Length: 217
Image 1 (cartoon, rainbow, N blue to C red):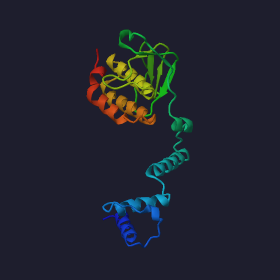
Image 2: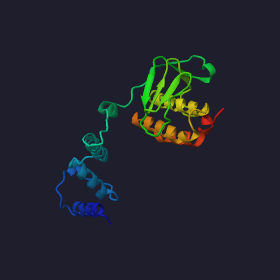
Image 3: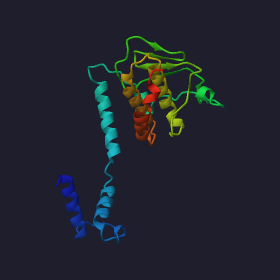
Image 4: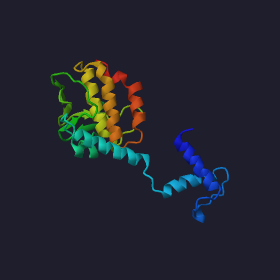
């Protein structure tokens, strides 16, 4: 038994014996779970930080250490906290050529999942992939959002835009097929950064069923 479990059991025993002075309204009539519920309430009264808060503090400390390290890593704190800016797009009325959305402004995205990209820029008709971990979409670029049974939501627009752009480069034989896993990872990280609840489910969907969309024509 670990130390935390041993401490919790000891607290439960002390609560059961009445050795800790707690308010009377904390009494639980459910005999089977009385001790465990009292332990949770007692811990809540101590205002211990949750695991999410601890992780946030740890992330802030790691970021501060990176900024002060001699490696010279440049981190934009605003983008790290607020996430990437969402693209401006319009809804196509009749799903022209199978597309549902079209950009109304030029949009550039810097990848969250870094990898080694080709040393030259890879350009399609409406978007370009640069070696500096950036993909740029021109005004008029159209895409179909999330495919299959997945539902399009405002928080998924950026992830589907970047994902479709990378898959199109692979379909046109400009980007090697080995980059598909990286494209799917970028798709997941954008969904997760936006706070999307079903980010992991959408990621598993593209890993299992979206391979056909990246195959060359």
